[in-house]
Image (tube, rainbow, N blue to C red; front, side, top):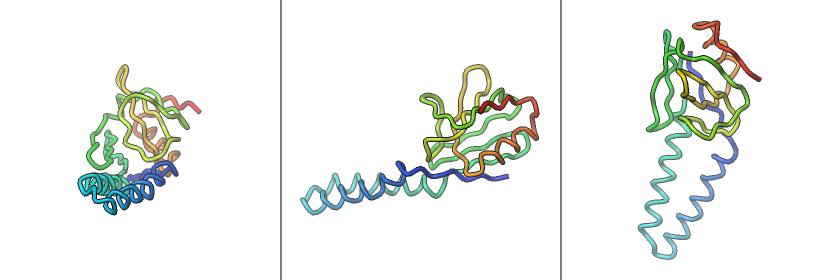
Length: 133
């Protein structure tokens, strides 16, 4: 099962802002700055189209451009809905998502479009996962 990330307005608003700054930099002859901003826009575009989560067997795979990894679903202890975390791995494009607690102290923040489907998929593999609203 593959789940794509929801996209928040804050993330989406970065494109026109960075584009405007890149245009201004180019017009003012600050080509290095314009080039750096264009690289940032390309990286954000990569994240926009390549952020997803997938359940394969007993693993949850995640990817957001260069950020990628997997966790064993059997290590997951708790899923907190509609939460934003400030630490841990955050392969997400939205500010409201799911905090997945695994191992003893680790957290993964995801923002799947079908959050309920993702939680149901996790609970299929490990029904003991505690879900907190």
